[in-house]
Image (cartoon, rainbow, N blue to C red):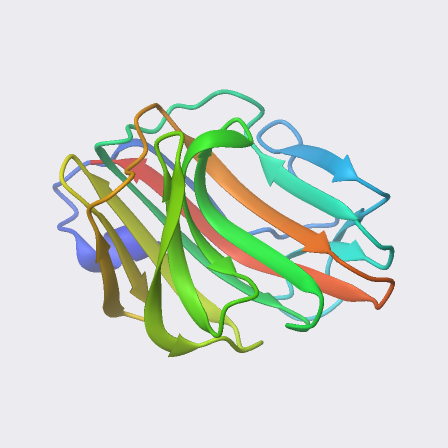
Length: 199
């Protein structure tokens, strides 16, 4: 059962919806595109129970992502993305999960970054972010970002944490997951669930 089915009546059919559980021995490349911003990140399935998919970095400026390679089928004023993810460390790295337009702006993303708190970063060409009250950590978290015409909402582990009304994305979007490494210490961005749908 998907998160959508848990929180919506079965008679309400989701529009343009997909669910990815990142199982099997390889990423579904009919759906996902693997991209490298710089360096030589490694894309791999996790060798652990319910481990999902990983992007591994061990070089300065390694940066990799997965997206839908420009399909951009989700409405910037009426869509939801849900993901379950975690980083292996918070040292010298950044990680993002959410919606983006083909790896550029506009976007609406939860970020694990250099601030002390989880925050929601949005862009309409100008990027701004709003901090939550949850300190950054390496635990696995359930993330939900809901986009409407008046705001973007971030729900973390079932609790609404941010309602952002500024610099909202102004173009169609697609799912996105990315890591950047800032030194040669090994680090991994892990994702084991992703769901997105138009509302």
